[in-house]
Amino acid sequence: MIDDPPPGPDGDEPRRSPALARPYAWTEGRTAPAVEIAVEALVETTAAGRAELGYFSSSALAQVTELCLRPRSLMEIAALLALPLGVVRVLVSDLMQDHLVIVRDTLTDTSSWDERHDLMERVLHGLRDL
Image 1 (cartoon, helix red, strand yellow):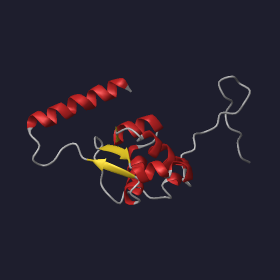
Image 2: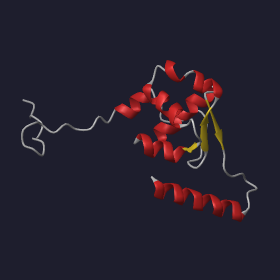
Image 3: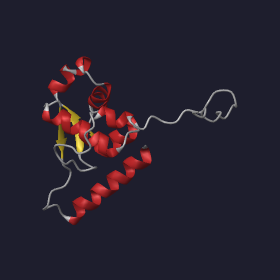
């Protein structure tokens, strides 16, 4: 015999467990992106991505593309969509491969300490704004 779910906070309707497979389903079971993307990298929708906005087969891809009409960090996209960072990495990687978004790295191997410090300040400021 299968037990009924426990009652919800109001005592009437059963409490439903969160759908754990949903983000996994959005990435078609993939857990690793085709391209590594830093959490602070800026993602922006391309002209081709803007043209495709109404034609996406996946609502998650459409949401990412729409959010990135203005540049947003990978971390910010994950927070705004309430998705795990790994899922967002896979989605953005897919969009990159289709040339629907571009990703701009914020630092290089030769970045100075001042550039790194400025980046940390911007990230902290952005996190506070979320």
